[in-house]
Length: 150
Picture 1 (cartoon, helix red, strand yellow):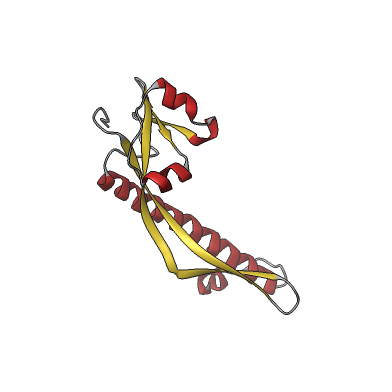
Picture 2: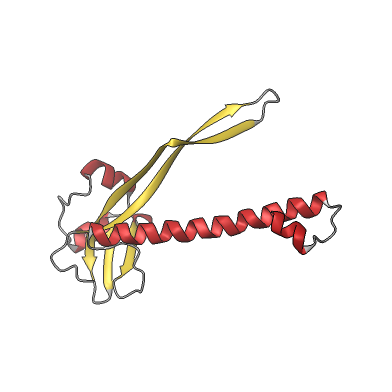
């Protein structure tokens, strides 16, 4: 991945809004509103380049204020001004970099990440359903026929 004339790297992120309500027993109920799920492309300013990769400004506040635009230089002074917790190193030779130099590559990576996440969650849900079925069977192992019904 080449970034010589680039001032930022890109990564797609999904945001989900949720609401909290209180039930009749005073317990908090958190619900995710799928109508407000958003996918956004985040731009991260490159603040220092090294032979192996780049340092980016990972500060969400900076990205909100500047909308990913780089009004600063990539000098050592700028690098020193950013708190350590707001810096992130991106290894450019990695098989799967954390951020990409094009929006197209970042979107492709996002889709792959979400497909893998869906696979993990599907397997987790299958395990939960199996545990419930075993519990309902008086904690006895299920037969193959019973498992296939899940």
